[in-house]
Image 1 (tube, rainbow, N blue to C red):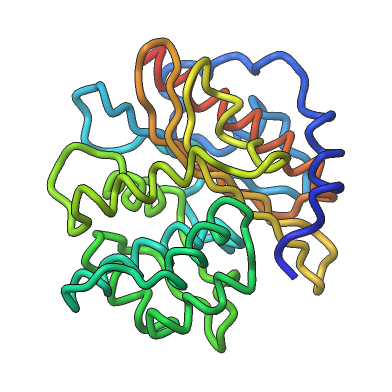
Image 2 (cartoon, helix red, strand yellow; image 1 turned 135 degrees about the horizontal axis):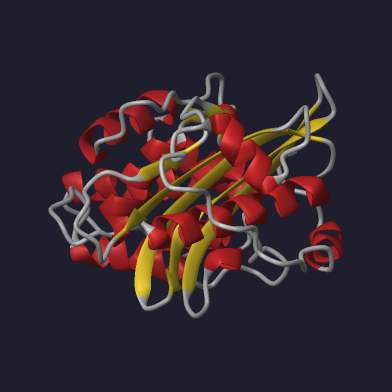
Length: 267
């Protein structure tokens, strides 16, 4: 349901070329209209980006656009894995061989059956929300009835989750868990490495999500992760909906990621 074939995704990859948008002018960080103009968002589409410079002095991310909730689609799989690792640690055990195998294909290949199995393992919506309280997420609501892809989140909350994985401060996740998630996010399957990686000039770690809403035939396209650009490490979350097609949504997310990182670096 949430993922299309790699052949479709491979087609998307050929559409990603293009010059990076210019950075926004100082003072326009929270202006959704200015951001929409800068990233050339279509009329029906909505997009929000958040960026935190891990090498900077700030503790709060710069948010571009309105930090309102969006469907997660498959980016929630990072949250599911973090919740699973917290659950296992609480019970003083390692992941089972089956859990480890499911976690790997869930992140690397965005496997939906694996996500559904691990969603049940963490206790579903209540398990995710319990873990999220510990991880510092304040604006994420788990999908009901097993529909984990309809979890709702904000770009700012996704930065909080990414900081629990990639940041240097205290976090409920132990070092091994953080390394496990971060490593898997660097091993994304061929054809799925689009998104925030467009803002990187060297390394990246990411998870993408894509979902066509059957009620509108419009697409949710999201990308979250860590990128390295200009010698700095950035946490980046870009959420969008109302896209006419998956390729259109991917191009919008990539423009948004480049614009947001470039603007954050300039400030």
